[in-house]
Amino acid sequence: MARHAGVSQATVSLVLGDKWTGRVSPRTVEAVRTAARELGYRPNLAARSLRLGRTRTALLVVPALTTEFFARVYTGAARVAAEGGFGVVLYPSPEGVGPARDPFDSARASLDGVIASSMAADALAAVRGGGLPLVMLDSAPDDKVAAATVNLDIADGMRQTAEHLLGLGHRRIAHVAAGVDTWTFRVRARALTATMGTVPGATVHTETAPLTVDEGQRAAERALTRPGPRPTALVCDDDILAAGACKAARRLGLRVPDDVSVTGFDDLALATAVDPELTTVRLPAEAVGAAGMRALMAVLDGETAHGDTTLPVELVHRGSSGPPPRQAPSGDGCPPA
Image (cartoon, rainbow, N blue to C red; front, side, top):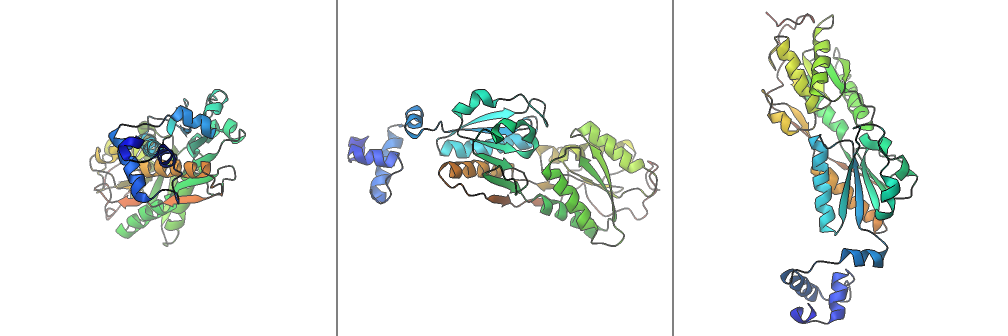
């Protein structure tokens, strides 16, 4: 490679070891890197690990891979890891949300650090006491164990949803809430309640459901048939729950959005597969994974101060939301006359 680039072996070593700053000119650095690409050079990661005392391997802990959101988080993390010469070991909790078999006793020696979703926090007891650098995703910013946190602006997403519905004229909202006790869902509930509370006469009723379409349908049916004035909009914590809410409306003979509006959260592929397509909050899942991996790599490079990164979200207005019906009947499951 040195002959190909027309430089010394020492210069090649400095460039490939990222130690060239102030010692090798940018033009020479580019010549070495061009030679490396042309010759198909790949670093010997095993040798580098022995030299640096690192494995250049990160563990990504998520609650499940059956959810598109976390698959996209992995895609973003793996892309940034590959650019930095890291590998990513993926660990989905076999029980979804909650305690999981401990993978860390056997893996700890081969890991440099951990990135984890707050929804898989119960699987992290061993890591929290094991000394590995930890970056938390979608987690309370004041987490004292994490070296850094990467969050989405979940509160703003729910505020955008509530303001959208209030602007359309909705005053009776049912919140189809995820039955998962984590930071991200608590934030959604607080933001929805707070925003609705800014408008006199606006009310929120909550029905809780596990994160499945069928349970979302059952929760929405309860909300739509409970005694008293029927809600004119269903605000769902997740697109999966929103799909269930749309099924519930159809089962009760209601039209979406003419009789009841439905909103989701995440902007999964499912959001455009239902009819009408879902108004939902778009979450940049790949950007979350990428930012988490960058934060961990920064920590491993010596930037150990606690920090919080918050990524913006966006409400996507589609066909499932519209103005409320002129006269919304009581919750007897019957469509308006």
